[in-house]
Figure (cartoon, rainbow, N blue to C red):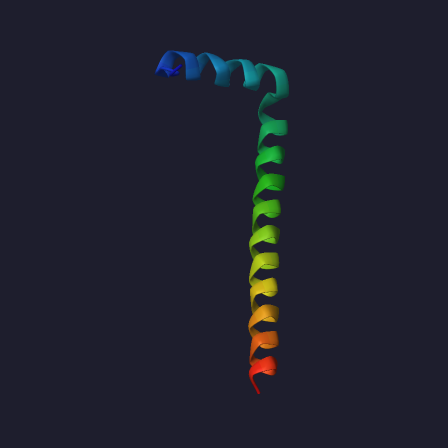
Length: 58
């Protein structure tokens, strides 16, 4: 089942009516912060794993 451009426009219009512009921008901001936090957590975990591997090798 594929969604065409008109179906996407209708879905976006319904979401806009339900949540409003202010709430959607707030959701986008929080989602961006969450993604950045997740990426930094992954990087910290990878750094810790590399340090552990180096300590084990020496």
